[in-house]
Length: 368
Image 1 (cartoon, rainbow, N blue to C red):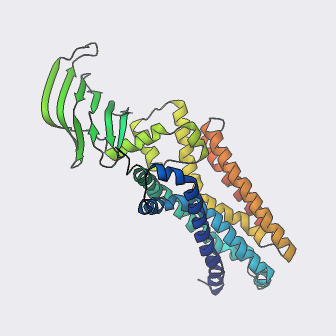
Image 2 (cartoon, helix red, strand yellow):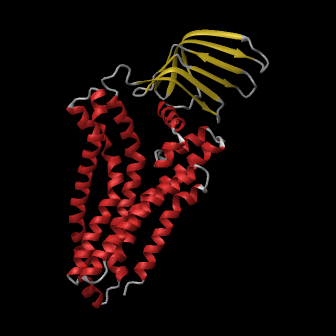
Image 3 (tube, rainbow, N blue to C red):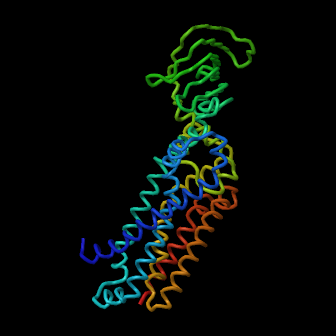
């Protein structure tokens, strides 16, 4: 790494650390004030609240990272511009794009970080936060009256309750057909996921040898039954329930599902209803496009933050913040239009990135 790159990185990372920590504290404080009534209703103690915000931190980081990067980069660039450092670097024969390499590198690292947080930390953090909220309420680990359909394997599951922590099912019922047309129904008092498979307890199994039969041809009763070939894990069941619960209104506001959760849903349901397919496809494209927000804000900040002259610096910063605000509005608008079926999912998710990244590159290219 060149000495110039190290200098530019150092001048960026210091304000970036301040901005990131400051915005994170602000976001947590704002959320604490707005959620205080819910915490009191849930009878959470101080330790529970601290644990709640610990597991919610990845979700907050996804929100504040692009904002912190934008303001830190604007601060660093305006500092260099006011002291004519950028002019001196350009006079030494260093192109503006070459000067931008450290900033683009940080934007790329932040984009990859946002993607990793969204895929591996935010979904589990959200589930843990919900469990903490229900910790002191009766039956907080249990979800009542669950049901889902695995259309790929032709199995329909229902249960009176699902333990979200252990995956245990109460009063489960599984209904499916065999390749020869035989229909099978299994009723049980309880089912547990152990050693990579489902074990049912207190089982009654009914067999219907033809589709026309309304009364079971055979009935088998057993205390314990080990289900062979049931590929649905508790985690996949909870993931599918999460997808089924996602409404168009909540989906239009932000991406709420990880890519792997959407993949699993399409594996179990290769041919969902058109409105469900549109919603999930928009969420998929939105999840892929969202991390690149960090790189886009770098491209937006570069031409405005590096403007020469004291007056132009502050005008450029104000313009950059205004454009980024418009960019975020367009992101939300695109997600809503894609979820509603008014735009193709890929266009709804990617058009703000492509439009503003292209504008940033064009403006940067025009730098003298």
